[in-house]
Length: 150
Ligand code: HEC
Image (cartoon, rainbow, N blue to C red):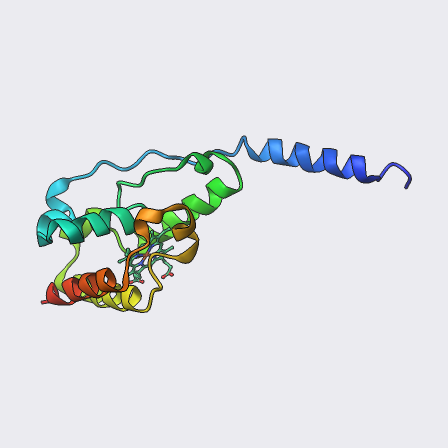
């Protein structure tokens, strides 16, 4: 097995990495109907609206912004996975289609996740300084979610 040396392994890894790059993610956002949008409907203060856009909308709306590294597999798959999972659980672009029960539940979960610092998820904060919200901002956002419950 003389041919399995370090050079062969490195070459193999490079080849695998290159092949991975052919499996691109779909970065097209679904069209946004602003009349169904959470911010349009709930009319938060500009501060809260900015916070939502900066810290939540990349994964919880049809307005995701894809950073440059989302062009590099396997990071791209990981980013896309978060967006798919995020919008499946909570989609601010579809807010107007949620019935009262569902909306209340999401607002409750939202307040809880923001208070417990479970959202935005930690890896996102490494590359998104604008999403690093302070304790005070967290409290304000959680309170806003609670106030919007019917
Ligand atoms: C980097 C992507 C990302 C960002 C940014 C993000 N989330 Fe999430 N969020 C997810 C993913 C993935 C899930 C589903 C898995 C889970 O619950 O942990 C989720 C789940 C949730 C849920 C649970 C919904 C349910 O009913 O199960 C709520 C509520 C939530 N997020 C609120 C927020 C809020 C509020 C923000 C902004 C302060 C935010 N998220 C920012 C990725 C994200």
